[in-house]
Length: 430
Image (cartoon, rainbow, N blue to C red; front, side):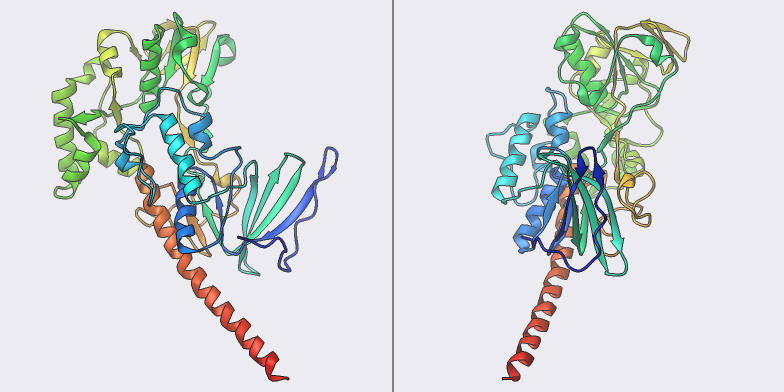
């Protein structure tokens, strides 16, 4: 797949660690380096494998899909039917339900990696990735601390960024948080409501995670209060036995987006009733227009709304400040609480290591508008940043793999011709 010897590019100097020098290796990769071993990175790797293009996948975690394995709650299921979430050229098992659980999805991803013989290099954190204009190559520097501190510099022609939009948790700061005294954690650490029985829990955020965690807490006899400080679209997960997403996708083939949004909101009102009287104000922009414009996904209700209507989940206003054992809201209300769960989302970490500012914006998302946000300059690519979920990442992966394969095959052909010409010249001397 790659050669351990490096072409004659000056390596980075060794770095002194706590117990001496880090080991340093320089590796030439005869193909792309893919950063990230989640669904996006696996999709690209599988598509490249089918094209016969060698590659290296690196990931800072100790497993594939670490977000799914280590940073999701137990009751999580895919929000969309499995046919919209499968990766390229590998359908879900027929006996999986329409909405697979997180554990089933992890099993599917492991089967995917095994099927395409994808073996990522785990526990390698990318320190920097920079394009060397002198040599026309990417230099990707990683650090691994186990089994011993090692720095690796990968040299390659193509770089695929597949770390996604959810690489780092967002932890907002609130006045008085240090005085609160109770347990505070991000939603990525939450597993189950079992430990919260009888507890008063403030859930900050009303997206899909905030809604589902509030529902899980309620089902475990906790007393959740959910902070809703902005407008939110709540849609039924299914309409007449069909996925709302599937219905919307079908309608968008024939109707303008704003008309589809109006139809969806009419259906939501019919099925869910007037949710604004429960403190859930809808945005002025339609659900799919809003998603295309901002990436904000509508909430697909799986039971939380019924709990809100019944009083099991209390909807509260935005946070003003925390006090000892309580939170003061912007409307003046003070709510006594025991714990806080921050369902405040995630962000990209690309700007922290990619030394480039033309393709990616300062928030770590490609600047190019959809559907062209997958290709940059000088062999730089991005997968999983389309804000269109797993299906969008799969389409990106196919495009990226085809584009790289075309260049790789042309360069390989030219190299073979050059080697053959040198060989003929050498033979002609005898």
